[in-house]
Image (cartoon, rainbow, N blue to C red; front, side, top):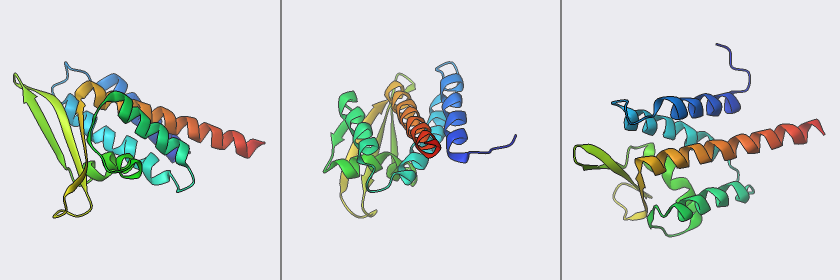
Length: 150
């Protein structure tokens, strides 16, 4: 299958996988969700330049509203934590009654440095945040295309 607009199509396809395949009745739902989450947050995070504070702030506000922030030093680090923690797999699944109950992700400057940001997501919250970031990035992409046409 051909890809003409990588950013847009990658996010759309990954979002579709999260919506259709990451379900409780699938044995590896959390594994698939974490894999998709890495792509859904990495691409938009890397495409966010210093002057694009609205996208960053919307993502941080979503994390705050979801109540997943356990520890945070500042919004910039909080914004990058999901990507920075998932890339080296700084993930600690929490189990309850034989199933994954929640996921703790931690970010630090270096492996020996203290943790500066810690987030705890339920599986449902992790999926919600992945889809939120995907939607916000697709909105931003659509606005960029619309601006170029004017």
